[in-house]
Length: 159
Length: 159
Length: 159
Length: 159
Image (cartoon, helix red, strand yellow):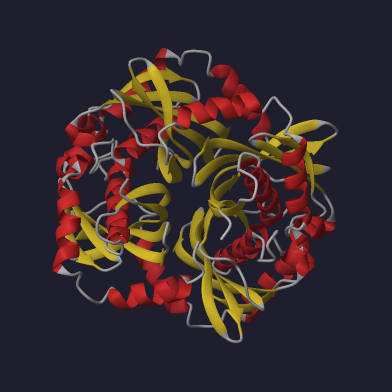
């Protein structure tokens, strides 16, 4: 709950134009590689910038709900990971990240060739970080917002 | 937003002691069977009462996050389905259910032989229904609450 | 839950540059004038655009929490009204708006000469509308984000 | 994020039967007395138990929305304070509490002679505490649930 929210936010938005350092990218990819669920769903990280991470999920029967749309659980799972790793890019080496909570609105039926989740740091603090979560359905290059949410994360220091 | 929240809630809680009718149970199982994600995760429905549904998810590497705990996305996916079907048990035949939004707190590392998600209707309305979501980690018969949340659902009438 | 989320969103963003029609502005101001809480807190509407409404709340002891910051309840109250009226600007004449639910993160101590809440429609639907909520603390012309959230609203048609 | 969620929860529920110690009650009342917003709204604490606090808000024009119901902002303000002080009862002397975030569903029009907000600790941790929030409309002794939510709080240690 540091008071410097506005500066951190400006900084985060500025940095989103940039690419994460090779060290940060390696840390994120190593951790993501240990998330059994992401591999099982078929999700992959497609962009790692400081304070922003993109994850894509191809459509297939294994990730659907009863009408054949992407299941809210699949939509949320990639949103949660995108936000978690967006926060993680701003954390010091040797620390880890856990999701405290998140809220997501399913704005429209999640359809498309694939989903793209974007997690963006809104406020980075020493203990808690807050991210905006967005998920787009993409078909033939057209993107539509299918889910939007907000997430709180905690930095975990080595024991 | 019908005003009869309190009556409906009392009714729902009373009914939770009971078993759903065979017709309702069949409707829920048929719809659940079409959720590709639930089968892919290995989740199964273990109880269907009016206004309350339980879903279990066995632990295995395919549902983990980076520390080997259940991934928040897997935890949320079964919570979302449990709440959705809890609402669905109270809907008239021929209607369907969609998740509007939900919020979940991950209260403790989600560990255990399996998770058990319980969705319970808090308020049933003509258009919107609100559920409480709880997820327990179960090991050797001991249950610990690992996630708690709240969900808004909408009833979809046939076109 | 209409599928046209993306179009509506683009439209809403485009329209936010514009001013609401005099009829819409009159409808919003008339309804706001009936919110006893807003007058009691000292809040006033400062901008009404299609899909976006701003509300300001001057700092004074009557709106504080125990440390002298703006109380989360005051911060949320103006955020809730800003989002509600942002949705209302897009509703047809003769309908009304109710808040279904909202979630807000308090990102930093809410300090300043006044708060400015901004409600922005993310997705407008026939039944449900989803807004982004932001609250800024303003001091000497400098603005810092102190709260961020998301809100679901329902359109109520005349009986 | 301590792993002992279930024990703490059992303990909290057990303790809710009890009355808070005179020292805890004095700490809560002293802090509540400094919340200018609570006095301005006319809210008062009516029960302080370990892990559970009740706050009442009498109905009057100063707390209404456009239809004469209690404003969601007033409903949320007392829910937020009830949860915050419920957490505070379990914190060690000399620490303080801040709201990280909360989510609330407005389940039914908030009407009644007064509202009663009940904040209950679901999970108490060293850093973060999660509360359930409930608000009842009370008229002629009959209580109806009008709002339900969940809140995350952080313990602030002296500098």
